[in-house]
Length: 200
Image (cartoon, rainbow, N blue to C red; front, side, top):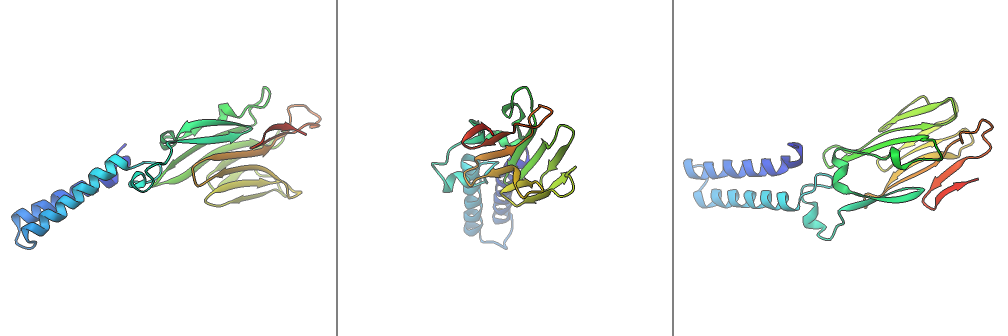
């Protein structure tokens, strides 16, 4: 909670210090000191009114018509309030294939910490990988893991991406994945992408 208003608190505190300096010292002329104090307090107020813990302390001033929701795409599209990203959103309940939940995913974002991912993906009926931000555990030999500031990807030994998390500039989140079916013969693979849930 404190971090959400850290910029505003610092600006307000600086305003008070500037006012005290103007009133009780001769170092700063009073008019200049009070002007600085008023300016800092003005920006603290604007930041409180227009600030956004997810997107930045002055985001609303620059992007007045920015939407306060984002879309989560994983076979189907669901809408969430952007503010919910502060504490993180568990998307696992929205990624269900049949009676199975082969993917678990929690995503959070704040302007001071950036994007944080916690995910697990079932590669086979016996093998699951765990992903935390840019690190991965349990990836089989021959598989690859790629990541940058906007995406995470797991690639199988044939060079085919089997799992992707992508977030766009407008905070939409996309999950694309190919996961094994719950049948023992692996004859069908649910494919999630932005066009919907397909079976090949």
